[in-house]
Length: 256
Image (tube, rainbow, N blue to C red; front, side):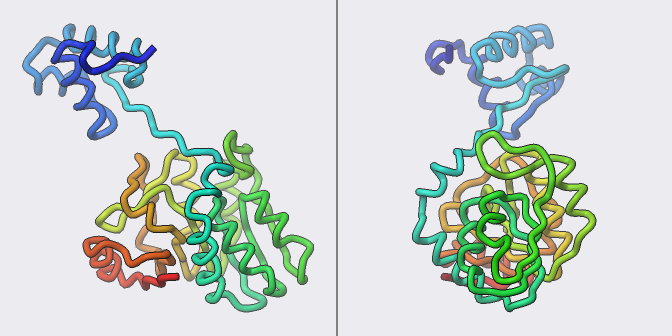
């Protein structure tokens, strides 16, 4: 069972908050920062780990990664905004285009908006996107192999990353867990971040699709290759700091 902060002595709470901020910490650093012995820190970590506050590792501790909600729940959040984003993003695509479509509720809105296009070549790890675009209007759809996610009808993992390495596309439409004020892209898991990073590096035009709720949501894993992003399609004007950071990288902001 979990414990409340008031149930723990002050030094335990100090250790907990220090781990939460960067996401991980070493025992030697905690010992130096708090001015106590390493044995004391180890006992603190053992107690907090036993109460589920973070995960103990060899030589330190790491914060639990926040879990992404199942796609059935995410699909009901900002549904109208996502459909608008999907329609705006789809205006970039012409018949005969090759594109990578990431998994997720917003990219599925992009796929639905592409329903009238013809002769598309689509690379995706999302089963719902396959059902939307495959065997339709002369499209060719390639499903990236990999492990099926627990909370979503999509594949992930090294097999999906390796499969994507065989292809290039004119466009990539990629979702994110969050957008930092500096224009960084973040995800919930390392596998997800690596796959999305490969998507960014495999297309000539890279479009991040994200509704405004992502502007204030920063998830723990950074997505690589953010320098490849050329467009952000969203439903509201981003905050000033984010807007400035994106424009400095020559990212075109399209508001649905």
